Image 1 (cartoon, rainbow, N blue to C red):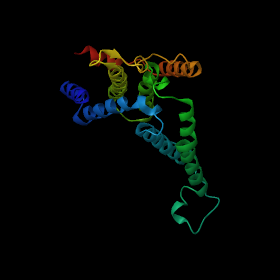
Image 2 (cartoon, rainbow, N blue to C red):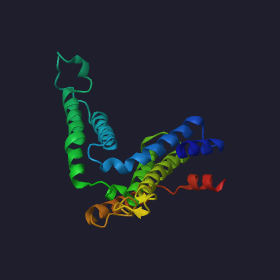
Image 3 (cartoon, helix red, strand yellow):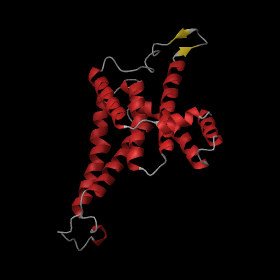
Image 4 (cartoon, rainbow, N blue to C red):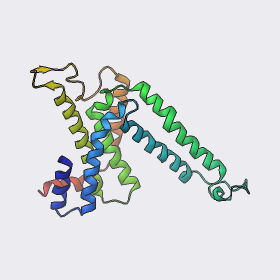
Length: 218
């Protein structure tokens, strides 16, 4: 419901078209799923590492030069990209999809660092950086997509905390306070790394002039 309201509100401003407003709704929904990537075997985690493995394989094919030195007559359909490039792409897909995912499962725990506001900001600003560097999208649209991700992330954390309060029995569950946090104090290395990543993104990103002007127009 909130996502639909956000899409309708941005469409009403006249600055975005229907597809761009619909995209903001999808980004907000995606943001609500991100805190649960620390659930081992959960759909958000599988979807994330599945997407990252495809990105890794595509990056290998796109960035590494194709080799034409070794012709393979019985596989002419893959000759343009080279057998070596294809093998490296499959290796990159496998490493990200399985060993890296298993390492993430070992280092993370549910409602840990992935439920922190700093990590939420890293997701948000990380997408803004990728969008501005790699996509031919409007600057304002990319910034709004980042904001939508962070709003969805915060909504998830708040709903988790509200669920920790048992209104009927007038008691607070033991899980209260574990979902909404700035950092994870008992994981100092991960918290420091998240802060360093956030600081680097803030340093690299340009001043959000378009976003501030859009907000000031209301």
